[in-house]
View 1 (cartoon, rainbow, N blue to C red):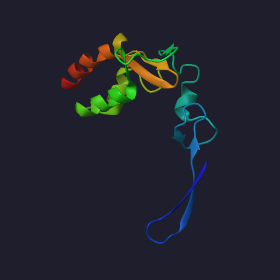
View 2 (cartoon, rainbow, N blue to C red; view 1 turned 30 degrees about the horizontal axis):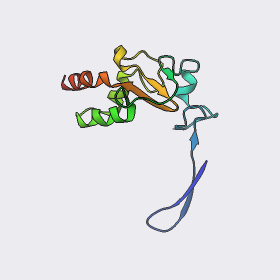
View 3 (cartoon, one colour; view 1 turned 135 degrees about the vertical axis):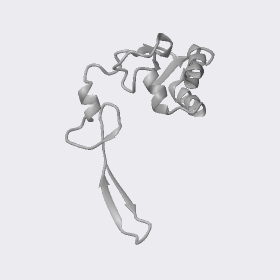
Length: 124
């Protein structure tokens, strides 16, 4: 994928080549079409995720994005929250079963029962 843009000083157009991993879609540098993290964890991605059919009930599930927002509001990073779920690729087990990732479609969720534990862990 190539992106074009102008610098703010002289109007010069620069072309930058950005490669995206064909598995996760994240940008990466290097050779091939698969990023180094996905290549390292090939066959292990999503090992600890649970695929679900249909739609998540809003009283039972909360999106990982919303949990990351909560973590930030508690003074923690998004990275901290994702690590509780076993990491971005789901190749490690979650910190505890309440942080298990459930995937509905393409969106990652946890059960809402994890919220009090997040608040407690953030205070530590």
